[in-house]
Length: 111
Image (cartoon, rainbow, N blue to C red; front, top):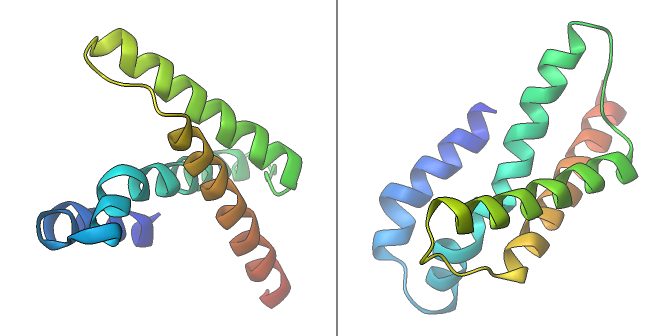
């Protein structure tokens, strides 16, 4: 979670204001959407760990990640009517789930 928070802060303070071109567009539009499921799922696993549970299955992680993306895209429309829905934001959340799953597998292999 700390690493994700650091990347988010770097994106907000350094990357978004200074980056241009395709990478700047990616950082502004999608990087936070990729990191969000990683952060939320990390938190959920910390809380669930207290009960001896772990979320590690690919299907469960992807279902949760896509659900998060759908919720955030819907909620943003309700909270900010001028917000524009972007299906690629949901795809970015799904990609974040894949990254989280891959990192979990990697860490499970090492420990």
